[in-house]
Length: 261
Image 1 (cartoon, rainbow, N blue to C red):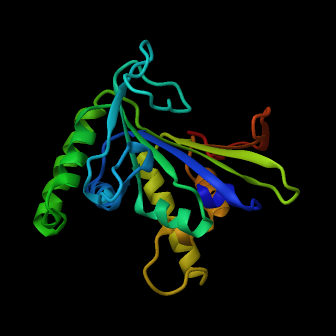
Image 2 (image 1 turned 120 degrees about the horizontal axis):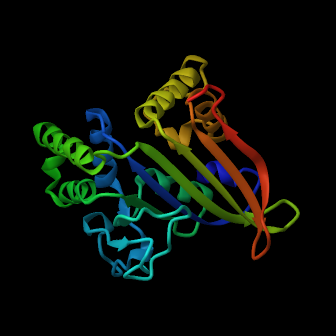
Image 3 (image 1 turned 90 degrees about the vertical axis):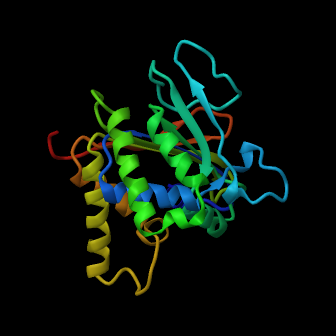
């Protein structure tokens, strides 16, 4: 998202992102989620003391309900919250820190919203476990626990994934603007498969150099988003741009998958 939003802006200053999802996790997705949490850092807004190692701190969580104000002064997600409790974790994934460095962003902010107690608890236990827990048998055992947690949290709920991000920056003519991008899909397993097809498509056409890379830093952001929308049914992508402290405007019409759901 930061690379997609930063196109044509310089400098860019601040990025804020949100993720929310529900649905049973496959084993490989659980492993990816666990390792991503282990390698993430606590958001600077989470109040980490100066000099502390953010990789070894517990991220903060808080609860929201639609009918009650938040128990702490947390920003609210840019979509309606469920009536049931939702845990919000403030962390910054490793690949987002790398993009922030490349784009010279001021302290990125990232929030993960979980609509059940079991998945965030399983992730937290793994994040606080000794480093050896990220190897071999211990990692697969934790992945099995996370799969079971996802099943418990998403029983009788429709699967979905939503991401939303905003970025502030200057246009070539010096206007301060805030860009936003939102993507929503209802096929969680299909999203993973579509992302894999994007990677294979670019690799087989020689667009990815040899070596080990992260998708976020390697694949073309706009082309990747457009590919997902074209090939994953019932997926919606919306991009907006607004002057800072002014009314907004749509910079791209809402896109939806061409195939019927």
